[in-house]
Length: 311
Image 1 (cartoon, rainbow, N blue to C red):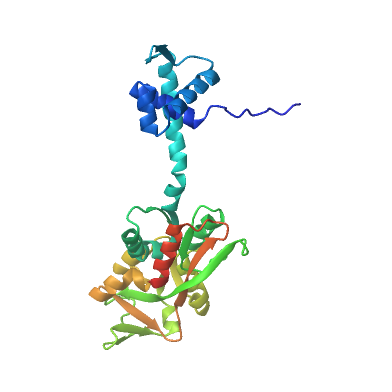
Image 2 (image 1 turned 90 degrees about the horizontal axis):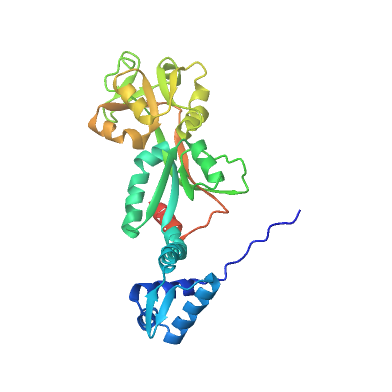
């Protein structure tokens, strides 16, 4: 079976541009001025196009060119082709100003907005597409080359370690917290007036309901590795997909919560929620930058990296 042979069009964009200009201006002389070509070059291009199409586009009456009935449908197609060509020509410029950013939930909701504000300040015409999900979902998108760069809270753990670049970005701290004057802390926790927080032992915390993020989130990863391993008998109410839901559930005293300091800083400052310190527990964690090594690092990508590293 013979392979089909693809034919390469012999019509050039120059010929189409000349034809369109003549069609719009009504003469080769005006077209030559508009296109900055000699009149002989314009006439030659039109003749070549008619030869390729094997049809006349204009009727020559003395020095005048009258549109042939064939001209209008060809003009419509030529305009479309030239428009698509300009779009393709400007594609790199469009791509240079476009970036796909991924972020795990806490970063995406509470930290990324200020970073984007700085990006738009540096590049007002930036075209930013965002994907916010839990850490493992975001890393998966990076691996599939759907995201230019990701900011995640948990250890990335990509499937293909060699294809993914991951760098430490900054340190964050998870905070155990409760509603102020919570029923769960009454008669069990010690309150520090100076530090405005409650003090609990690990054994005391294990007796209280704890609301946590779902498996796969960066927050849950740290809770599993640095908190729950010390609490084999802890009463965890349920895994919840949204940090805001945990915060509101704690606000109505369903249990204690454990989230990033960025999520509850306003409530801690106003006093509606209160921090709970647990002796012997360190809930600090590293935030990561993640990108695929095969992904093109455009100018806007580098600008965003510079903003991140300065933050």
